[in-house]
Amino acid sequence: MIEAEALTKRYGNTIAVDQLSFQVLPGQVTGFLGPNGSGKSTTMRMIVGLDSPDSGRVRVKGKRYRDLAWPLREVGALLEARAIHPGRSSANHLLALARANRIPAERVDEVLELVGLSAVARRRAGKLSLGMGQRLGIAAALLGDPGVLLFDEPVNGLDPDGIRWARNLLRSLAAEGRTVFVSSHLMSEMALTADHVIVVGRGRLMADLPIGELTARSLGFVRVKSPAPGALGDRLSAMGGVVSKVAGGALEVRGIRAEQVGEVAAELGVVLHELSPMEASLEEAYLELTGEAVEYRGGAGRGPDAADPTSVAQADVTAGEGARDG
Image 1 (cartoon, rainbow, N blue to C red):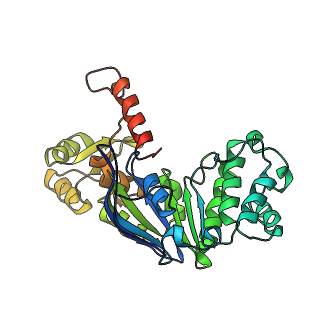
Image 2: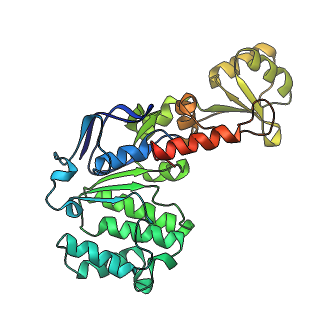
Image 3: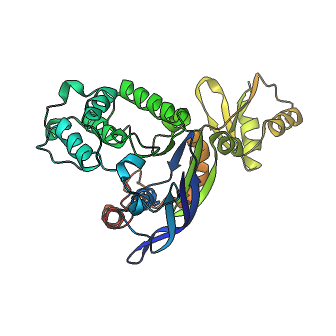
């Protein structure tokens, strides 16, 4: 179990994490979601003692990370997959970690086989592809057979087959009773992998609940098809709905429930060929929840609403020096 209590971290005038409290329970995959700069990476770094909170505390299995006798046997983490010497082979990198934590050398071969790197075990880390580097980082996290695992963007650089492999691995680790905490920007993948989600924005907790409850909170949208879409769409828009035309002449209506759409159609005498309430996806529910917490937005052009590249570049520098979130 991971327990965070009122975690706060500042970098100069920037508050990266703000009074953040949550628990990550064993036996399930917990997704850690939030916009860029929301404090996810900083929070993970505080869990494993790479950063110290200004206030609050975080415990792993009831202890501070630095108080664990053999940390790699208790907590496995993939935070920076490329944080290895480029001239060292995959096998030697893992062997050095194993010896430092009194882990049997044969465990190195086991985890290399598990992540599919046995054939390149002697290749220098600097020569590995991005996906292979991710697999090596996962192998290092699993080396001590720990009960608690943290992964920051674990599928970055993996091909579709590798993403499916990583998804199955994470779910199998949770099924064994381990605590699995995963951050990702890939909402479609999190929808298939996570059982529970913790959502943060601007360093603050926004949601902590099972993934099904998060999607159920969103209104989703209603798909409507009619031979007279114009009049219906105009009335729904006037009621505050967000109406979009989609392929096949149908309308997607957000902000108004299916029952209301049907009542409006009856009032107007409009024939309906389809009236289908559609459940929100994780991505839609997430965007709805975090819309006001996005700090760095791109611009569509060079008009008055377009992003200023100078200010965005400076924001990225601040995020790199502060929250370290990508």
